[in-house]
Length: 331
Image (tube, rainbow, N blue to C red; front, top):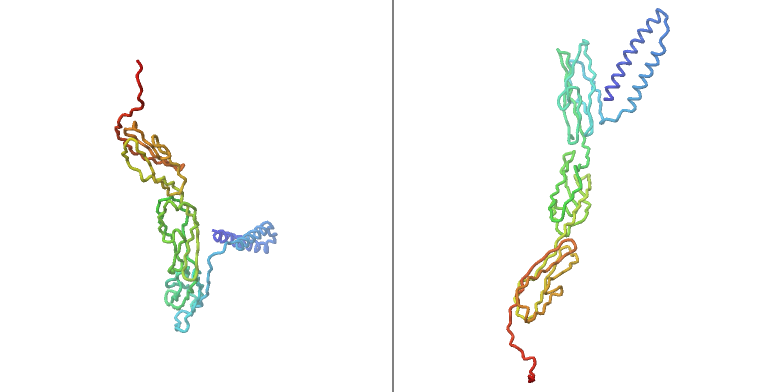
């Protein structure tokens, strides 16, 4: 865009300069003074062009070479092959200078990888030697010049793309494969820090936390590193109650409950046992307690509560009567 503006300003300057030359020519004949405003305007345009050139953003490096072609009809030998050397990612731009003894209009053509204008924008991975031919013709005769272009390798580090933070919950599986490319087309070795070292991570109840994950990519010479955050949110694991089963006892026997309580998060557990057993887990039955009882055992970690209910059957045991006292009946 800037180049178009500069070119437009230069064309305007040329037109104005032409008008000025014409005006000056008239001044010599008519002896009329030159318009000072016009001169000031030309000076302003020239200053603007100079400023545009000085402030223009740098472009990809261009390698311009002037090629002097032999006169039409002349032959060239292999010893006359011109060699040009550039680095990968530079622009090759050939400038031609040809002589035609008849002063005929000549045209040029270029073989691949040069385009029709003699320009080749190299890229990473183009390292090597290229033989091209430049042809100049006046429509009747033509001359070809061989040119060898050597593109030297410029190694750049691999590129790690599109990394972003990952957030999951405990118990989920993470499959992570970073997108890595190499501008030179080199083989790249990629490594990932723990816990994603193997690209797949099956989280469990102990995985909660925040992790700094670093992805490293190396082509054997240069290395690139990028990092992101892996956030694993805690998912509460409820307590588990084991070691309970239905009981059958006789009247007069003791009932003892010893539930096994566990918690994967190692949270503090509060245990409650409903009556007639009670939280201490002990019930001394009497000879009048026969019947079927439902007893609920509850365990809570302060976040979640689990319960388990068992049946306790107390069977009747017949006891013989007891003589409590013997006394005389008064008349």
